[in-house]
Length: 109
Length: 118
Image (tube, rainbow over all chains, first blue to last red; front, side, top):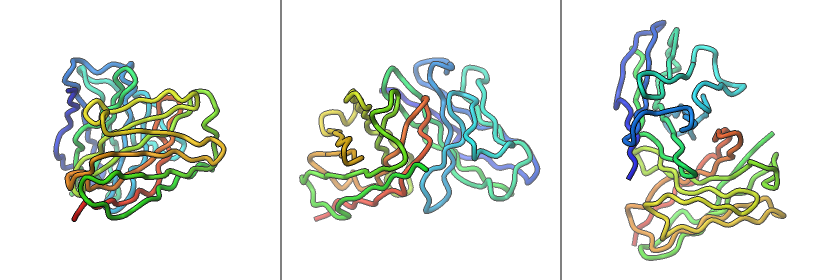
């Protein structure tokens, strides 16, 4: 069974920069895994941020960016705002099926 | 404007079959590359991808739940139906449907909480 791993929690100061990563138990994450990233706040449905590694949706703030880094998918937040405190999930594609990571709880402190 | 909304029972007894409906607007499942998927989230836990259906009726299932899941569509009604058999208390979760296009799950429904309890 394929497992997608994310940092359980990260803390960042307002105005700072933080990178969340997403690893695959099958090996290096590539663009072929079509990495997606989502933000979820308590009591809300997930909101899509990034698709196919680095593409932003029309509503995605400019401070969010996606990339591949050291064999993992990565989500970088630059100039973090208090409202960025949330759970973040990555989603990877494996030949027709999709697998979510366990999520990263980002605290802005 | 794309919208999706989940509907179905809020309470299911163990061993029962769950049927949830996703009613959508703003897009057509007949469009090439467009799909609707189901994702669930147990209280306080992570998201879990369940299944996906395309307009050409191609279907994909999570390997761990494949024997319990069925996804169907009614293109004329703009609906996608998820069926999950042999429900267990561990299946208690918020169930979401989402629009998928260009390898992105971009629009999500608000979710519906299903509790499995006797």
